[in-house]
Length: 75
Image: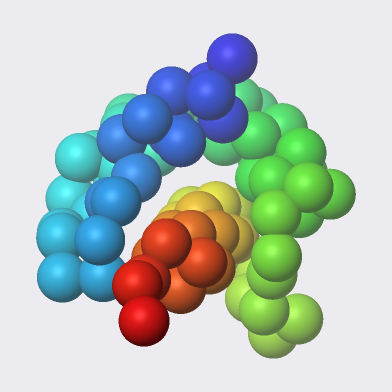
């Protein structure tokens, strides 16, 4: 459920800030953040060098946002 909310707070465009998403993640208890990051690592694209749970989630959602923007771009 936390990952669903995170998806809704993630920026929809490359120039949008991710402050709402980071605020949500920053307020989570460590156990909830770790569980959410573990799920995100299984289903979102990730940077192999990232170990911070917040960055795993933010980076994965950013990649999806970029892919979505690319596939919706017109000719």
